[in-house]
Length: 111
Image (cartoon, rainbow, N blue to C red; front, top):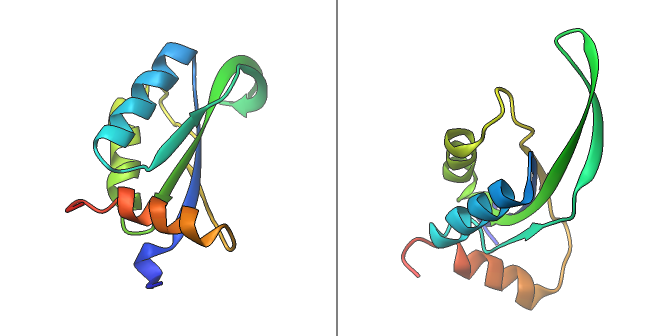
C-alpha cells in the first residue's frame, strides 16, 4: 500500500451528539471518511488558557487514509465549534485486510 494510502484513525470531540452526528455525516458523504463512530458522551478534564476545565463531550472515531487526511482536517476545522479542536491522527499498523481495503476504496474521490 503506498504511503499516502495508509489507514488512519482520527480522533476528535464535539460538544454534543447532534454536532457529532452532523460532522460524521458530512465527512462520510464527502468521502473524507469511510466510517465515523459517534460514541457516547464522556467527561473531559483539560487545561485551557491557564485554568482546569471539565466538559461533557462526544468522541468521534474517524477511519480515513493518509491521502484523504488533509481535506478531512480542513473539513473538521471548518465545521468545528471549538476554537482549538482536538484532531489527532493515529496510524493503523494492522487490521483486517479486507476492512482496510474498504476504507481505502470508500475514501477515493473517484470511487
